Image (cartoon, rainbow, N blue to C red):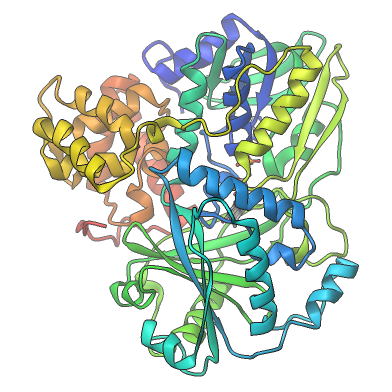
Length: 577
Ligand SMILES: Cc1cc2nc3c(=O)[nH]c(=O)nc-3n(C[C@H](O)[C@H](O)[C@H](O)COP(=O)(O)OP(=O)(O)OC[C@H]3O[C@@H](n4cnc5c(N)ncnc54)[C@H](O)[C@@H]3O)c2cc1C
């Protein structure tokens, strides 16, 4: 789809790369790991550019289970380093990104005292799959004691508790009465990973003109002048020279290396799917926390409340990256079976699904190891650039949870290659709208009092939840000109959408629906809403009537094909999440 290259802010960012096609560091792939590395380098004053062939955060980073977690199950694989780093980072993110990362109470129902105990050491010793069994109470107890010991951090999250059947059912009465115990511990979740990643990106861009970013720019090859980049909106190609090229293209890392003429076989990602349900009864049954348990096939599955909906995931299936990444009907049946196992008297069917999403985990190649037991740790591979002097670094692996530490590690390697000293640490450095986020009820009240005059307290609260303290800047923008709620979703206003289009590199309507807002995630979309949004975007992005209509069609098609959202059958009613 073509757009007027002069009128869109995102198009200007793309054109600027062609006008000055050089940087010290070029990062290919703007998922959370590329973006966090970009921020880290930008803070050191390094001349750095990041690109993505699609929208920002549209790969694996948009498909996570939204958990910022230590990964208690990785203890079973003997991945103590990873678990310790993950727990430390979880505690850190609760402090530096409090607007998006919140403590998550997690309950594990158990149906036996001992199963899993024998399988665990087998897996730990051989790194092969032991017989899939439900994890028994004893194993979980040992894991949680260890987990608590990693979590000692002045009480970022409370310690775990163990309960017998009676107490468990008092706390969560809709749980399967056949359970024997429950364990409850705390991890964290992020209600809007896409927005968190955009905040990390914004932090990098705000450091100055040495830090540049463009979406819809693909690395397609390599020649003597640099990496061949293609603007996927206009089709224009140019060579971009950099001393260090960083491949953070997640599950596509081998494909990107092949395009650069540096073939690799590092990756072996597995697909995972999720569904989002609008189901008040199930939402209430979770008691506001996560239910996390092992299905009889050995997969860990989760059910938890998010943005007023219930998120259910996930699967772990081998995937061929040349094939589309979709949630299948079989996976949905599997999710329904496990809800029945945990909450036997709650009925769930396809009419409750408002959104589905799937992604491929950027895991290392794992040969005969079963998907669920492949290491979730990451490594960095280095090789010569090939067609010109320089270094190619490829990231293999990397969870959402550890993005800050991973970026510090990766940018540390890059700084060494460039001979540049580190001047700023990202440890403890607030991210985006997490800066000065009101941490206490009193501070919260003060913030709302300071910003509620202009837009009303309820709206100020909604914006604080959505954007953290960046809401202050957004409120200023909203009040500079007349504003009005969207006719087809009054939870957003026209100027809010205009702000996102101007400031956040929106290129297509789908970017706004999936990654600048939660509009698609919570359900309630309609063709009328898409048309209204396209009407707000058009003057900012330079769309004429034909292009606006084409954007609505393209967005509706992607929603149907990828996310199972059939707009023709959808109701226009939107319940407040
Ligand atoms: C089902 C599932 C559940 C998960 N749950 C969790 C969880 O709860 N907690 C957790 O911590 N982690 C979780 N993860 C893992 C986590 O989401 C990923 O490991 C992480 O997001 C990877 O980020 P990334 O930046 O490395 O890769 P990605 O987000 O995939 O980013 C790579 C980017 O590279 C771009 N790209 C590819 N090729 C090119 C090219 N040639 N030119 C330009 N750009 C290119 C892509 O468009 C993409 O945006 C989960 C993952 C999945 C799939």
